[in-house]
Length: 304
Image 1 (tube, rainbow, N blue to C red):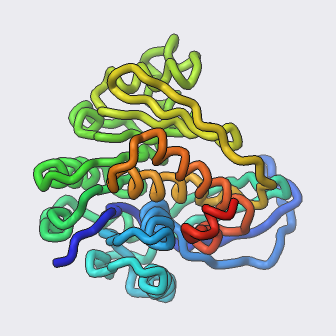
Image 2 (spheres, rainbow, N blue to C red; image 1 turned 30 degrees about the horizontal axis):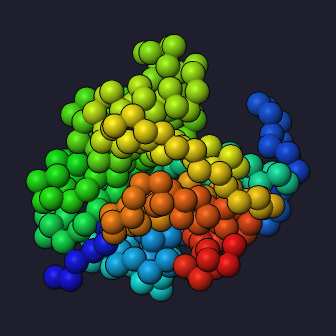
């Protein structure tokens, strides 16, 4: 089997998107735009982002035997992602219900569907794929026990492990300790540090230092329009600013950032250089509507 620059183990969803003037309050109804259906899911997003940039990318995921599943598979293949690891059946394809306001901010409700049926046994059965990867990237839209199995399997195969704990959930100590790179936003950092209030209320540098103490070799904290912070185990922490852009839709921008970062870092870039590239990818993505369809090629990133 040919090798992967990046193997993404994670979710694949259909994004059902409605634009609204403002997001509804509890008990309130607001009118929105026509419904748009797009391929999404944190795992599928990361895979497409990396593949569009030129990485040899594979996806290990589960979709339903339905129209949404076929949309996701077709999109992955069209972007150059190897889909031999995508399993079909067990439940309907996962769905994300997304409202986007005029500022580009979004609110999301996810129905996991088939993503919740991606099991540790599925990971074990995909050992050949894991062994072919330089980097294995994970998120938390699949069961935690499956994430733990993938982390263990990847480490055993000699792959670097990148984890974006999103949506945030309690992580076993051994999973954090097995991460070569932990990628978090402000919300995720505060959640992981909820038992350390002083750190949770501190600066991004304080979050990174506290998270490094829990075992990962490196930590990246994304800061939205302000860029990102890269921190390594030797105590070095560097802020990388983002180019100024006009945000249209932030949906999936974090996934584009993480996919780009995992690829470039696994390919040998220094962490700060990989983050600098990933920040530009994320900044390009927010200037266009949608998730996967907003992801740039390497040439588009260079032109930013």
